[in-house]
Every structure is written in structure tokens, then in C-alpha cells.
Image (cartoon, rainbow, N blue to C red):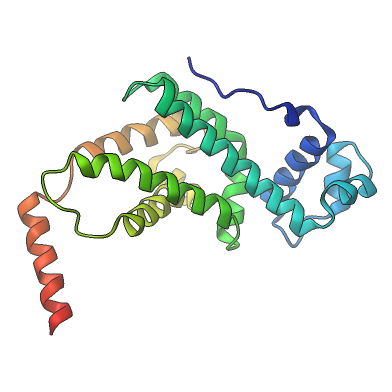
Length: 212
């Protein structure tokens, strides 16, 4: 099974502080989280937190950068090592992101995590570029817009995890819920709800509306 390669930085006090910050930001939100509480969880002094990061805002930016780096690493491993549909890798990748779900949900709800969102959009553009070359019809929207919408749809489950969990009868962050979610996504993406003819008619209606 493919796994993410360990980062030497993850063995340092700086990494312990970063991970403690993700825990506090995810549980309490950015405004309520404190440097002191983060330091206690990391087992360091408040002064060391400020020495490494300078401010709480810089600490949150470091958390976002870490997740963006992780997602880039997972994506690169898919491109380099994994065959399409490798369920073992998909499970490993989802598990690698699991510890960060609550941080990500809170950060997105607060309007933060811009570097992470932008990274996912950029990666989405790369995947769409490959998919577009295999299409028989031209896309109805530009690639970046489509990548941004797909990214928003993917992250919506993280932000709305409580509602999704209630609706499907299982915590989406649990193995059972994750399996239900994965099966649903596979089915949705493999069976489009619009036929090419229906899509063409909808696009034509939009064009007519814009001209009127």
C-alpha cells in the first residue's frame, strides 16, 4: 500500500507546536484558541511558540501550508506510483487527511485556509486538463472555474460533516461513514445526472438568457 513519506520536520518541536495548534484551532476556533493552550498541549513554553512562529496568525498560516504540502505530496504519489482506481491508495490518502478534518472544517467555515483551497484548485486544474483531452465535446466552462467548483464541492462534506453524518446515519469521519461516502462519490461520478443532450440544452438556455 502506498503511504506518505515521513517529513523530517515532523519530528521537531516546531511540528509538535503546529499539530497542537491544529487541534486547538479545530476544537475552539482561531479566535478562542490561545498560544498558552497550544504550548501546553505541545509540551513547550509559550515563548518557544512565539520564537518559532511569531504570532498566532503566522501559526495558522503554517498549519495551512503544512496541509497544502501534504495534499501536493499525495497528488504527486498518485501521478507517479498509483494506477487509476487503486482503492488501497485512495483509502491511505483519505486516512492521511483524517487527523486534519476538524481543523479544515473550522478553518474553511471561518474563511481561512486560502492556501490550501488554492492548492486544491491548482491540482484540480491539472486533473481536468488530462480529462479534457479525452473528451469528445468541448467544456462548457473554463478549467479554473470548474476546478474551483469541484474543490468547493469536495470540501463541503468536511464543513457540513455534522449534517451529512446525520443524514447517512454514520459519522463521515469514522471508517463506516468514510466507506459510505466513498461509495456514494464513486456512484455519483460514474453516473452523470445529465445526458450530453440535456447538458447541451441547458447550456443553450444559459446562452439565450445571457443574450436577452
